Length: 430
Image (cartoon, helix red, strand yellow):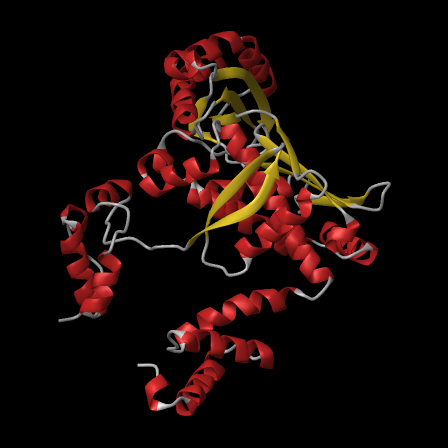
């Protein structure tokens, strides 16, 4: 019988029944199916409610970055990531930053935009004025649907309106500016936008299509700054090298993309560890990097009067502490407790500091020994394990590959066989 992915009623099956169907379709072994079905800290019923068509979970390593001093307070930073060297690099950068007081942060507050697309308006510029004149009424209607948010000081705080050109002519776009407090805000903002849409249609004579939050959170900016003493990071030549590396990213979007990817190594790892939305964070960050029309680095580096390196970052970070996986995932809840943050804004500012630390570490490595040396030292262990090494042989194979500068799967297998032959029967690894 020919295999087919057209499985009627798949979503109605239990997770185990779905896994059995997938096992048969893909020819999974009992061991492979068992690995997929392990749910770790989560119960099957919890996983089954989080996303659709559940068959198991995909574990990601969880580590902790140390040494972070932010606004005079010490933090341990949980990071969920599969890439080696990231957590070590962040910890090392934070250690270097401590000499000059660590990281200082600030933010604009937890404001998000809800977008309402109004089409078919004959006089869009006039309609824009109508909407702005009705601002108080629109805000009142929006806030009426979320009294809890308003009770805690949040809610719709402003209304903006813009005329935008499209291939089918100009449209009017209304922005609701919503203080989301400690929530990421998608549910609240989307509900508000949907609530006021009929009123805006009536006021403008147009037709509303999309009513949805924007992930370009330019009213929810997080900022961090750190001074790195030139003696602590390798001297004046290293300072100059880091600044030149930053200027490369400033001049060339091909380099800026990788520059910003390094920032997101840290930020996305904390986002995932705390149960926040990595896709929203990354979309917002990269959109903000291109908001001027040219894709640019999210950090900046310069030299102060003492010759020390000063690094800064400004980045939109729409993260929350209430709702979603942050509230429902037990590991995410524990990670928030490890962080010790009390508000979503504090979480965002901490994440900005982590992003700056991660980027500094990458630029310092590039400006000195190159990125591969430290990365490959850690990556080599993964390659050794993939080749079948266990116990003490993992480190022996890894160290040999790094020494030879040949961190490859084929070389790992050759070295493993070589070390096994050299071992006495009593020392032989099973």
